[in-house]
Image (tube, rainbow, N blue to C red; front, side, top):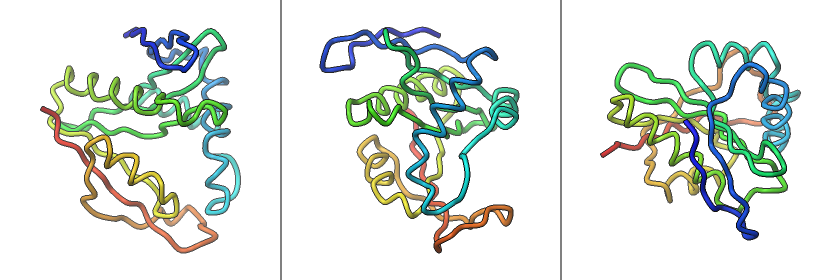
Length: 167
C-alpha cells in the first residue's frame, strides 16, 4: 500500500506505506516523541520495541514518509467487522499540516477494503483537542472506559471511545 499525496506547504510528496520490521526503531522514536504531551497523565515512554513488535503481529502500521523520512504513523487492526485505529502519531514539528487527517483517511480506506462497517478508536479524556479533531473527521463519541488497572494515571481520567460508520 503506497499512496503519494501532496501534503505540506512546500509541496513535498508524502508517501503512505505499510511498516515492516526494520521500521520498528523509527516507529518507537516517533510515537514516543508525539506522545510526550501525555506525560502529565502517565509516566514513561508510550511504547517500546517489544510492544511495537506485538502490535505488528496483531495488526499493522501505516507510515507517512517524505524526503526527510518518517513523519507520521497510525496503527490498524481489524476486529470482526470493525477497524480499530490507534497510536496516530505525527512528528511534533510537522503537526497541524494535515498529516494526521491523511493517515486517518488512509486507515479508513484500508478498513473499507477489509470489509469493515465502522472504525473505532479511543483517546484519553485529558487530551481535550483530540475528540474535536476526530469529530471533524466524522467520528462520534459512543462511550467511555476506565484506564487499564496496570496504568497508573497521575490525574483522574478515562478513555473516550469514538466510532465512525464507513460508507
